[in-house]
Amino acid sequence: LGTDRIDLLLIHDVDVWTHGKDAIEDRFREAMSGAYVALDKLRSEGVVAGIGIGVNEAEMCVRFAQAGSFEVMLLAGRYSLLEQPAL
Image (cartoon, rainbow, N blue to C red; front, side, top):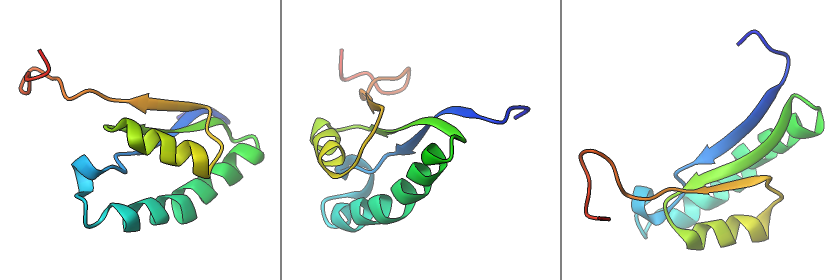
């Protein structure tokens, strides 16, 4: 990347839409015990300025906010050139 510091890293798509109702609890625990721990360490070392999540459901933003410390939460919408029911 040609840099010694990354501005922002996101944990991505830990939500029911992506993994289903049966798997979301396991994926959430994995994200918090694995990805979050690693990203938090990078942040504390100054390698990463901030960490966050990118999900498709507001409920997951609440869960992550209660479970950890994040600088940003990206709540994506289900709209693209191929998928337009949000209109």
